[in-house]
Length: 156
Image (cartoon, rainbow, N blue to C red; front, top):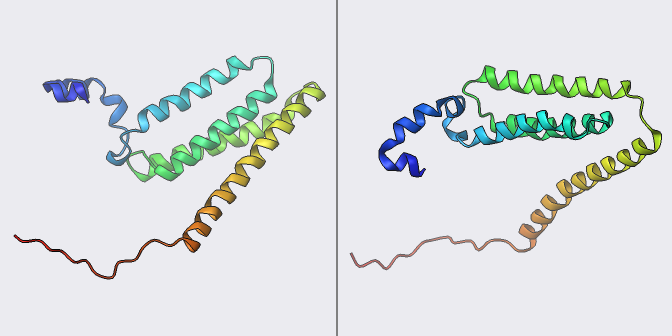
């Protein structure tokens, strides 16, 4: 923002056009999100090089989170790029699920990781149910004040 306001805005926007002109105006902020997704996809196999099952779990979670975000926001310009991105993410998740059956891992490590994985899934599902229900119950028993008319004493 400071470079744009300094009078060199056209130069800055022209230089970084490859980041911003892919997305709709409403989703101008999606470029860093997209870069974080790609960074996560690139870094996870190097962080867990000796644990293939952890790579599959975490890549699946990463793709699901960013896939839902992409499907919700639909940041790309046009229907076809949004559809292609969602379809590609879905195919990658299905490929990861198929690859999960091919690993030969230590049973104790896998059991521990599966317990943690399913515990996190349970906690997220529980929060996704409890938080909206709590909000709806709060709104039910503590309603907003209703104003039927607006009275203005303006002396203009």
